[in-house]
Length: 398
Image (tube, rainbow, N blue to C red; front, top):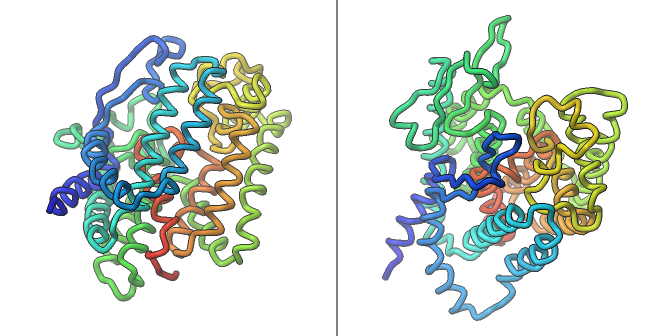
């Protein structure tokens, strides 16, 4: 009876996934050295409203199914939160992040549990329209060498130009160009969203590119915008998943161990290199050494960064650009071990080739950046990807 209402809310939820429109609260703990840090601040986003409106439909389906198995992931998140929060350096910050993770696990549960027969076209159409809009905004920004402004300001587009200090620039034939931001906080985050969204659309549409002319148009639009992000990490991630996706599952499950080992070596390399990202990696190991078992607390890396010896050489206060080291510093050995086990389970169980490619892309780009664990748009997309990846009714091949 209310199918049309759920479809409408779901369409808006997916359509506005990349939006930064939000209301931030700024308590004292959201400041670091007098600077406001948005992902330390409690935030009410536009997608939060749609999420709350979708909850009754999820609860109704769970009640009919009468199974506790589907609630296992949210339950485990709560259990680890109970262990990690009281021992955190700043428990309030940690608690707020765990609340976010509980929400994200429920989002993943919704997409795992929803009836794709009724919602596949809705999700695919909304995500396609979303990717097209953010792609054209990014292309137009590079053409203007500034942000577009109203009405995209109301989607969360920030106001800046190529001359604004701190803006990400690229060198193109000796000329400095502002990279494509679209409505994201950084071009790398935008690039990651484009790649994973496109692969998810392919999995939902279940067609090869040569059989779907609209997909070719989408590929050209998003591909052009992706190139204008000049995101080296995204380009490396694309090459990597094209190669890794051809490997047997028995070799793919070794990737988490390899990536974690590589990350730890990156932190040790600071003894020989002074690159900012490598220094942040070293700082993450120093933060981890404070509380090695359960970490300093989720989202507490920035608060503890000044305590690290490597901090004296770090020019910009930011999270470590490596999701494995970030997990290690904030949740300790137990947290990283839990993530390691979950990654192996996901890699073993993903049957859809496009979704597997998207997951591999995230694992590779996570070696060079943190946005999959820190920025709302990317975290939401990751939770949806996980929900879809555990299903058995999405079949496609590369």
